[in-house]
Length: 138
Image (cartoon, rainbow, N blue to C red):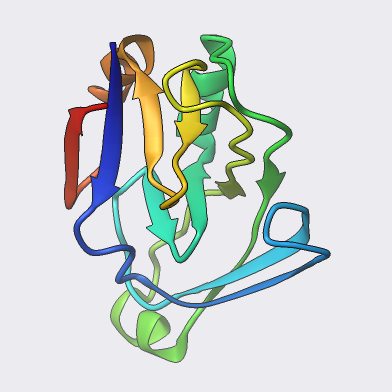
């Protein structure tokens, strides 16, 4: 069984995102700016999915199919963030390179850039933080 993750309100904590590459699918460098602190391990921003190192390690340990090489992001915090969260460190974040077929691999992506995950992945997501999403059968 497969499930679609749809974000009701894609990330409100990231104000800017910069990428360089030939297309959105061959990003060579990625830079994000955080405005607020979030405990989420998975974000969607525009057409990209961003995961914490913790979540990426879960994906790798379980050898889920559908992920390519995930690149670590250059992370910056905004002035607003510094004013409110003076001593809060940010975790490492990675751009998920989703290459899988939705409904075929453990992790895939739809034409609308929603993630489609297998029941195996959903079971592992129960231990991580993901908010403001709808998870429905695919």
